Length: 453
Image (cartoon, rainbow, N blue to C red; front, side, top):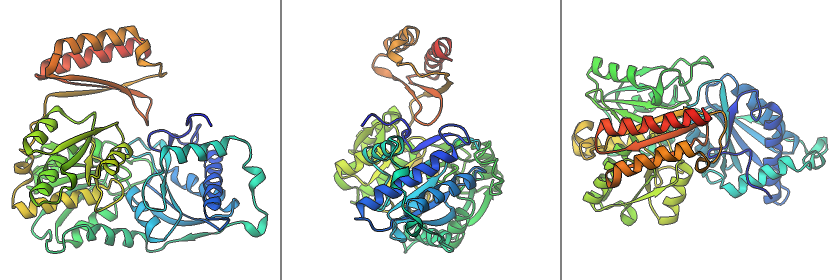
């Protein structure tokens, strides 16, 4: 079996109705998953949950997955529009064998993707994805199709949203509530547009919701976790206690404090790690970040006496390190938070509830809690690329990187990597001053644009 080609760091992703995000691919993916599950179950009919975000192309891909699953003898359980972590919840709740998520997360609406949860609510490991991909490409699928009596059915889970809302509320401490808190939500016209307002209102908060009218094409459009300007302005206008922004599929969270200042996943990780440690609940005295975690987070964790593990970029790799080391808390600076004792995957709503619980216990504003972390100056530039040659084979880029590293010395770092989900290369530089950081980051980005932009 060769290396994976279809699956990236977070499932299959691309422009909808263009390779690889075609109806034909989705049909064959449904077939391959149904066959693999059927073999695992000793020939018994598999049951697979299918959920989606608000993209226009979700209907097309949903129907293609249903067709593929049913044609290979699987049953499809349709939950409609639901955040990615909600599909994990429903997969467990319905005792299904797997769950499909149709979403491209924070990408623009013309993109879409498909990712998989296993029966236990965890994302499929790389090896299983590779096995499914091999079955899709080895030419054997058609010969495995059952006759008419073996074809599966599809069912709609009518109360899926209510089940997910109940799950989220259950992760908030029962002795606490949100009465008196003024919260502004930015749902990014994505999958949280119904669930998030309901959760926070039902826990007692006064809620104002932005960007909760999806039309299939406005998901992530200058809103949500990637674009917080409107949220910052609304928090200030309402004198709200906090602003919460979710991405298109609801698995990441970006926070805006009461002063209209955006906080990163690193801030939330530091706040929650200290709270867990103070209460004696931080297992193995460990928090997990990634290689993109800010220099300042490392310093904060050292002061708190907490070990900070650093995984590869991607919430699946954060989770892999957490499970390997026995940790219960991990995060990416981009806002993917994993509270492993609350959920099997990143969940923006659940993450927000854990942060709000810390605020309630401490009796402090979120800006006061966030003061624990002083970020080192950092710049991130995303460079669109037409191809992906190995970075080591680009002499101009390597020269710019080496020059930056020499100037920074021990006072900063450089990280250059291709995105796992988009056609771009990410250039990140941290340094002692804003001026130096920006200058060096821009120099590396310019070298990239010159060679492969």
